[in-house]
Image 1 (spheres, helix red, strand yellow):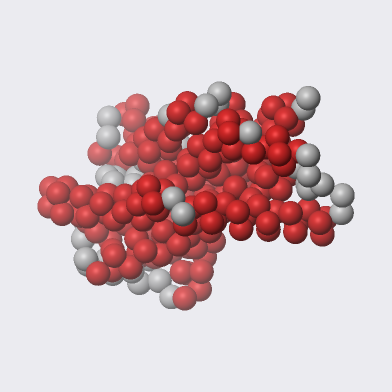
Image 2: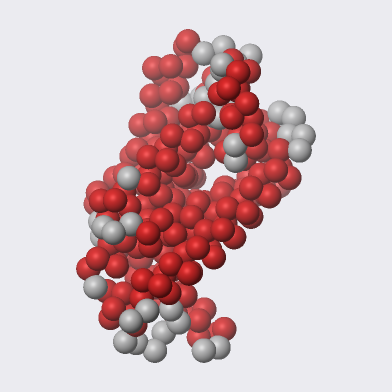
Length: 254
């Protein structure tokens, strides 16, 4: 099958998944309301007790953006597992479409949905006191980093969706996505953590992405965080892509 037809099939699957999202009230609530609630909770409940050398909301917003993007990406595992469970994948196999378009449609939908959610979170953050200093070029770079992060985690979530035997099991994967940003520089500086957690926070993939976001939006030093962020995202995306493709072929080969 030609590349042009594969792209057309992927666009069709993307349209299908976007319609499913818009017609699912619980998904829309979780996608839009949860990020707002997390933002307001950390700003108003915990913000007064945090000492980060400046306004806590300016420090925490990049972390919350990544937390919500990670959680939103994890839903890819559930949606793919649901498709496998309800038999729609078997119907797709009888059609003259590119098999890769099924996975691509889910992943691209995740990226678009999470970029929209990110914009809403930023607008609410600005309304409650977030004051970014980045110019338009830095904002564009920040959105590029977010898109890379979501793309990487969405492919990884797709692989876990192929592994899960049912949507309930796939839903458990979101716990990992929610937990990882907490042990990073998202909410407190890593040097305030115990030694073992400090080392983990400094050397896990979320921290360089957050520090890059913080540098682009707030003008803090970025150092080598941007390079590390790109390398982590590219590596995770490649592993997720290859694993998801292999697992999809195995699950649908009959």
